[in-house]
Length: 241
Image 1 (cartoon, rainbow, N blue to C red):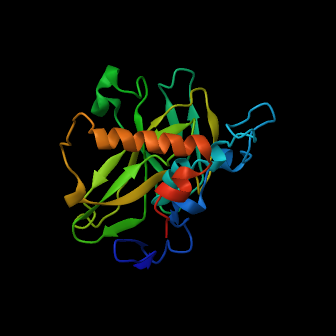
Image 2 (cartoon, one colour; image 1 turned 120 degrees about the horizontal axis):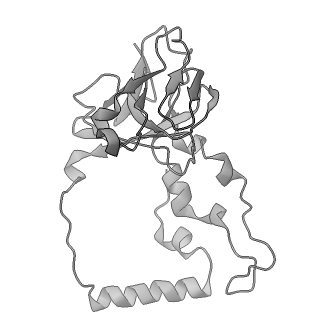
Image 3 (cartoon, rainbow, N blue to C red; image 1 turned 30 degrees about the vertical axis):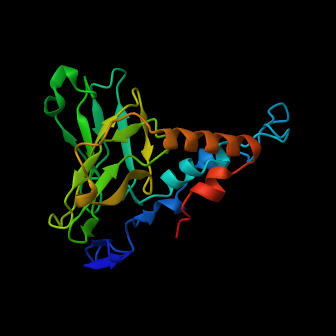
């Protein structure tokens, strides 16, 4: 087995025959979606901010960018053609790849039958050849790639204790596109994986009335934002490494 991205928290590895053949997992900050890249930093002339300058667009929204930059993206490992009929009840997948199936299926009954979000079709499952290993006490959260708008399918989220379950994890998904006959290419983002420390996960959180100090702090931040740009980015956001 050959590994990549080895660090103290998470690493990925696969068998030697697949390494340098299938697409590797990649840090999410290297796969920012194209729609976001195309946004201009400032808006049209008719949109102005409190200082009279052109309003900033989502291109300058650090929370959006930080979310899309978090974790690692696992891509589809091979090209595959998918065909569906007009109501989505039939999904046909191209022939197996050199390394076997690229996509398999879960029966819709496993997701509730007629109440399944895939109904009348079955759920699909993307096959993954990358093993994820995390440090003791860390699990891996699997979510659809953040802010990647994929109209054809959505992988379901999951949380796996990858410090003990050191084995390939496949990705169940809902196929959305009906009357479709097209290629899903190798490298298409499937999921973002984010290591999480289990001891930090809680089932309950305090829900309370804010204090006077907290209320005044909110007003302070609002006033700062009303008089200058980039308050969050420059003063309140922790710089990323």
